[in-house]
Image 1 (tube, rainbow, N blue to C red):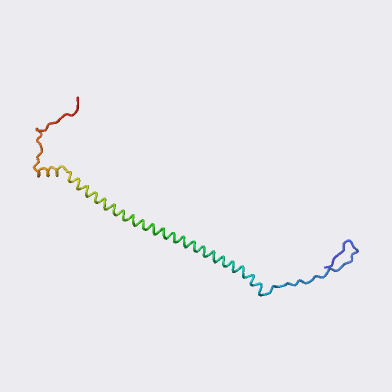
Image 2 (image 1 turned 60 degrees about the vertical axis):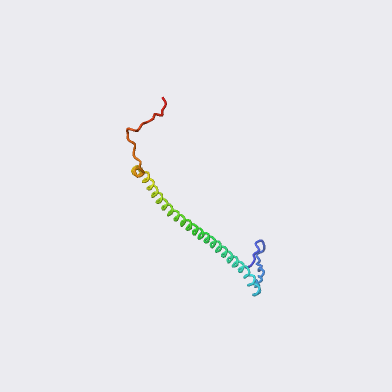
Length: 133
């Protein structure tokens, strides 16, 4: 494109010619070494980060499994204690039944007759008044 002198006599002056740009390319051996180094570091970081997350999840899962095992053990001990409680309740009921049958009036009277004891007649019974007047 030609330059125009707006204030001049109207003479067109040709524009200076452009110099063609030449692109310089780096040497083929140097470019891949620089380009690969960050990729290796990034891949190493990704690999290390993945290993860290996998380790964290493994530890968490191990903790969950250990907690479940502990809960199962506690449930087993609670079940054994429930069985013992039922057994002891049945034993207590049997003993209570024995005590009530041993303390019954008919049994005591029968045992007393076997030992030669007889009830006192109502006419021989006297009462004392312990209250003060």
